Image (cartoon, rainbow, N blue to C red; front, side, top):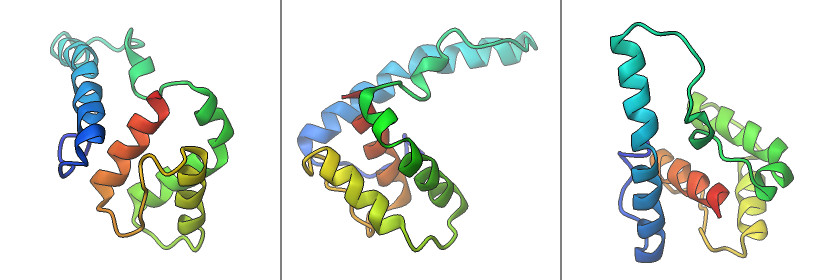
Length: 114
């Protein structure tokens, strides 16, 4: 999903490109483990969900948001989650309910890296 997102605003696209590049060691590690049929903890798993002050502040909203995002079900509070993301980041990422799912996901991932 993060590789399928439509191009973002130029300053956000730079962050998104850097995030995608940062995932390459994790992708390589997963490929190697699959080829060798290794089942073990990933050395680079911190790239999947970076820990930040913001992720702690928004832990409830992020959990609900990810559930909504991946299930495509109805959640009457999704506008609230996006508003919280925007408020906490001074609208730097400009989350909108109309954004495609892939765009919302990449914005969320790069938001948590800052």
